Image 1: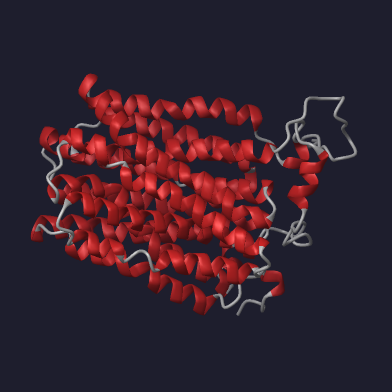
Image 2: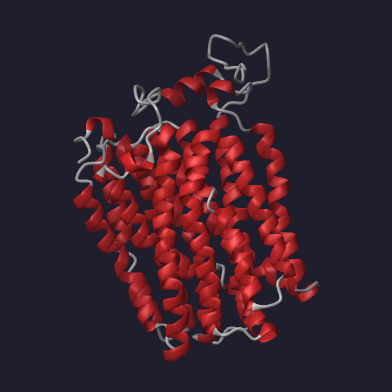
Length: 440
């Protein structure tokens, strides 16, 4: 059976169809919207945690195990979804993931116990695991190397917009209609996105709206031109590269910190700083708005340095190092004398993490061919989810037994500098694996 038609610069002319300049940024906007929806669905239960604890009588450890269930599914499916997306393609793979997690998000409305919420969280985690492998693969397909960190920073900023929008949206829906309706409405957003994705996403070479100039721009500076026709690497061979381990361990050490802020920040503001549910709606979004700026600026910084003539490796690592050493502000935050000072310091930490994340994600496409990016990102995401599995019950039992957030905030402050050291040790120079030393 013939594949989809392929368009090249010589096949089309401006008079034959309506072309869209800068089409790659429209694709980036779709990725941004998907990440926004992803985090609205992910964080709804965190915003409602104090309310649902009163309604359904959860303990702190119950909530910790719910988060654990999400992380287990996320870790397992990250590897599966990355491989699936590499096999079936970005368009279909992302569509399947979005439909799955949207249904799972709506399914929370049927839960009535800690166990049934845990089941719903497991199903949500399984679907949401496809988000980042698909998004990073789409960026690798649609952007030249020097723009990938910026594009990643922009779409990753959608996670923060989701975190910003969730408290006021979910609290309003809950107070007006009830908590079940909050899950149904936020879960249904994914099906709206799905219509636009299926209508507009194609590979650049297959897209009927792309200009010849933009297609040439996307192909410029390609890091792996000869590798794309080679067979896909199985995960066993990918794990033979220490570059892959640098990416995987970097994600495994730092992703749990973001999970902590996503799932426990509203609870910290309620229990540690005395915020009401309405005050959560008014103020809990601030650190995530700051993270939005950090995501874009962190991705922009490495690209800016590359345009100034810095080598890719030096530019990426400089941006990552700056972000890593801003993270200890989270330790200071827990000792801050006022809630507003704590929010400001936490905002610096969340901003730094997302700047770090924009550059770490880009390592996968810096070092591996596009055909293998989904699997590499999946392996790294799985490692991050395993770290999240560890921190979830640790946080739950720490709060239940000791009633303090101090040890948890100390962990948030030290992991990124440690991860920077691990990455630098395993990846002395960021370069395509074909031009680096062979795996050992």
